[in-house]
Structure formats: structure tokens, C-alpha cells
Amino acid sequence: MKYVIAAIKPHKLDEVREALTAIGVRGMMVSEIKGFGTQSGHTEIYRGAEYAVNFVPKMKLEIAVADALADDVVGTIAQVSRTGKIGDGKIFVLELKDAMRVRTGETGEDAL
Image 1 (cartoon, rainbow, N blue to C red):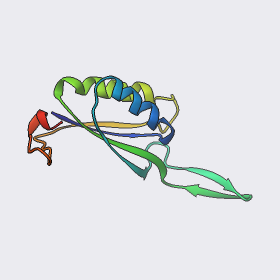
Image 2: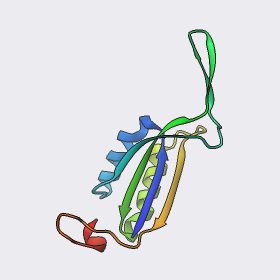
Image 3: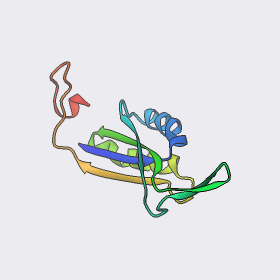
């Protein structure tokens, strides 16, 4: 099993969720986060004054999937969330040792 963690632009969330559902992803966790990467934040003008925004809002997706689906999940997230501009996000893939569905006690891929 794999654990996919992706940070994407907030306005891409619904599109990414729909695309992942279409390829067979049955669940995910979503969190609002802030961070910075290459862009190191940006400046905004509010009421005539310029402010530095050091942390950019992002959405964090956490998805546990079977090994066979991992490459499709990563490819789908990358394709759908890509705008071609700086700040499109990052995707990380980790090995997932085990999982358990609390309600039934199922473990491993059966719990996904």
C-alpha cells in the first residue's frame, strides 16, 4: 500500500476530487494548510498598502491506496492540478505499512 500526500491550489480541489473518484479512489482526507516553496510567498495590496504574504494557502490531500493504484493517483493529481504557474504544489508517496477500518476491524488493503 502507498500513502499519497499532495499539496495543491485550493481552487483545484473539486476538480481533483472528481478525477480521483473517477479512477476508483474511495476516500481521502483534506486539510487547509499554508506553506511556501520556490515562490517564497508573495505580496498583496490592501487599501493602498503592500503586505508580504509569507505563507500561501494550499489544500493538503492524504490518500491511502493499493500499490496498483498509486501511479494513477499521482498522475491524476499532477495532471488535473497543473496550471503551469509557480505554486502548483507537490506530491509525496510513502510506503504504508498497515491500515485498519475501525468499524469492522479489517486490515491491510481490505481496510482501504
